[in-house]
Image 1 (spheres, helix red, strand yellow):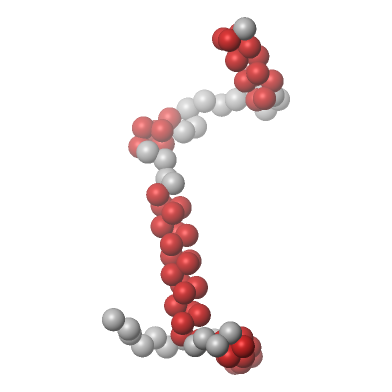
Image 2 (tube, one colour):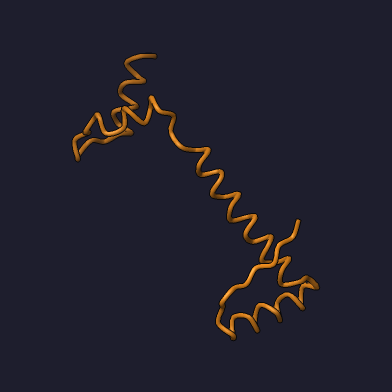
Length: 83
């Protein structure tokens, strides 16, 4: 179901957008609708990537030293474990 929407946008932006739509043989409404779909889909994906509650509760419970070399620590621990 389509619904009418009123937007307030700078006149020059509207003119450029209409020209762009004309060059692409599309309606400005179609371009804006597809942009909004893409934008909201991206936001939905961000929501899905949120941490689960258990992991979230652990966040910040460990403070690493500022000079910690993460790659070296990881390599050393993996060598200890597997070699």
